[in-house]
Image 1 (tube, rainbow, N blue to C red):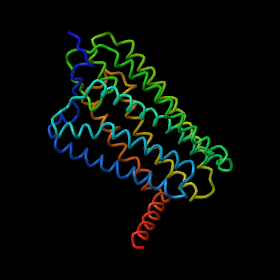
Image 2: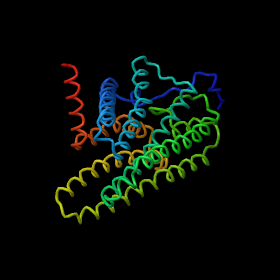
Image 3: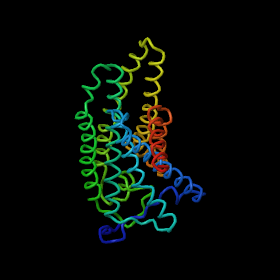
Image 4: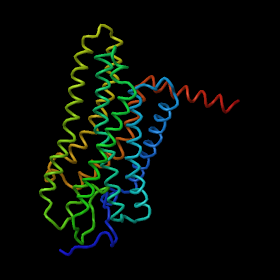
Length: 314
């Protein structure tokens, strides 16, 4: 096959889920509704955490960062997919593809690490409550946040540069919703087997340790909760932890399918469905899972609304 110079040519063509669907209008309307929900719910959660002093505690600092990551992650993918469908224009430039890949990898990797830090926060809060404000003091929290962003961005830039250095063939169609490593490597005109193995090993390395840390934290939490004398304390701890575990299950399930499961075991259509799940569905559901079952967040939103109503009538 002939090579083509993607930096000077027309870039790539994203053949996402809307192109392969039998009812693209319905799916487009559903994706638009989910994106609107993601924008609204994440912005409201960020507003509550920023404006309400009672939420200026470690777990809500981390939760605010999770909402920010979700908001950015879905915005990297959804608006372009929506506009491509409306304009019947699915092309993305070489630079645009590289940028989208870098941002998606950064945000996904940062969320992976942040979820592990959130599990540690819950472990300290429930198993060592007397030492909570020492072990989770503001400096430690911001160090966790910085670590998540920095490690994820460094990893993302290495992956992006190395993936995009390959020569690509004339078939420019990416059978995927966004520019990601597995579908792009299928267009390469060089042997990528070693690099695919490296991506697999690094995917396992990046995903499994945080997941093990999360499972270990919640195992210790469960053992502590079962010995709590107060039924109310047990219920509150279980509700808080079940919300986090729901989010963890959705994120790690999708990430494991995409980057840990060997590529022969999943098809482009399955990849498209999974990509919609972790770039659009999960960012819409995460804030609802945390806020609707959280009296503190709902109370903060009511207080902010009350202050706004008083301000508008004064």
